[in-house]
Length: 223
Image (cartoon, rainbow, N blue to C red; front, side, top):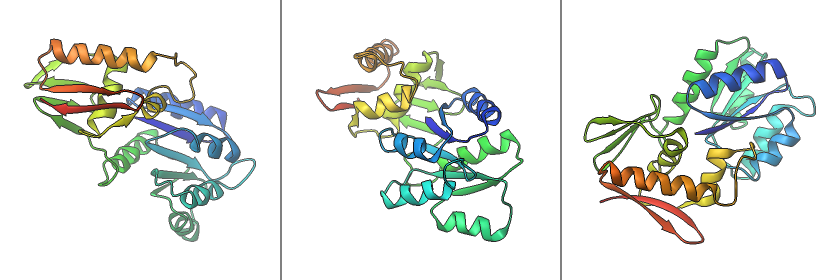
């Protein structure tokens, strides 16, 4: 799962990115409303953590623009504004949750987990297909009840596909979720990780198969 953090305090941003990554998420960070809207216009994220006090615009502007674009990505607002009217305004603008500064990082992570478990978000902690179960929090794969180790990138691809079983996932979506803004993506990087994952599942006798839809993307089905 890749998240976007929109926060202009560099020290706090670095801390949050580190904490999110330690919790098993990928995280990109931007500092302005303009950068946030540009990135969200081209990259797919599982959720957005949005500070309202940005240097170039109020974060609520980003939120309203997102919703006007029909982008339903879950948004958690971060703000030092703790008035009831401020919270109500943020929620009415389209926010999914609201966290007042200062806050415990553990609470932020817990709230993100709760957002990603909500119905309709294609999300959940335990993903199952055939004889395969993937614990998205513990980052552990079980096949016929037995734990197996895969690389972090293989697990990332597997999670993306398992959240949409039987449906084609565009290659661009896989790229965005794995690499985000890191720029660490070669022309055939996704194909390499899909190939490795497919072989790993075959070697482990998983009752699931990954199919390549040429020119479009990938899907996973039970076998």
